Length: 75
Image 1 (cartoon, rainbow, N blue to C red):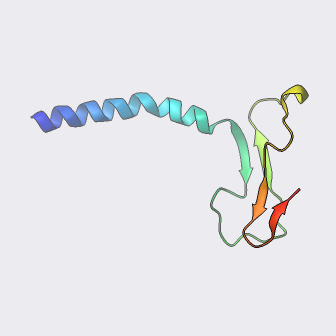
Image 2: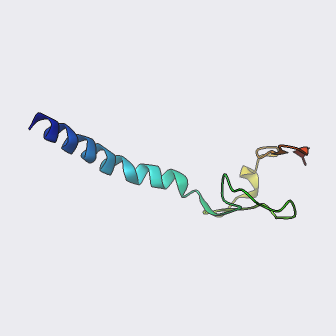
């Protein structure tokens, strides 16, 4: 019975925290290729679409860096 109560509390905590986790991940509407993709052509474009409309004043240069495991840094 004690283990059952502990399990119920754990499930409740997970259910409460799930919306917060999903909100963090929803800041991007579209990402391609998907994170940790394999077998992606080196000709593939990298696409990141933010869910909210971006304001030009909030864009920070050099915030995103692209570094190839073989090719090194890209501008």
